Amino acid sequence: MNRRCRKCFFKKVCHKKPSYKAWLKTYTKKAVTAILVIALIDLQLSYVLAFIGQVQIAESLSSTIATTIVGVMVGYF
Image 1 (cartoon, rainbow, N blue to C red):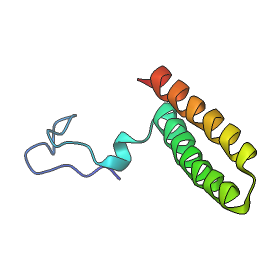
Image 2: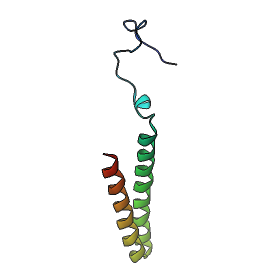
Image 3: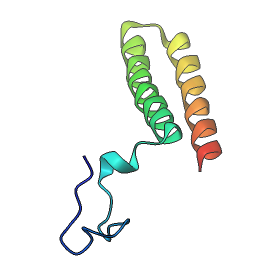
Image 4: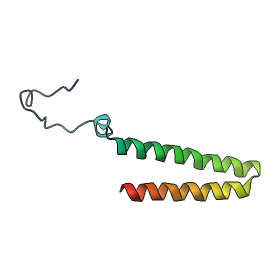
């Protein structure tokens, strides 16, 4: 439910700044946020692989994920 302040009760647009949840409602913002969160989790998993001893796989995984993050963010911005 959209609640308005007393000043803007009868106006169509409220003067207050929209909340973070309202700002995050567009599909692009949701998609970029999900991609960024998943990519950061995957980057942490590459450190786990390096710790286990799979250094070659960890290096290729890190570079692929970093390239993906940069590509998505540059395209978005």
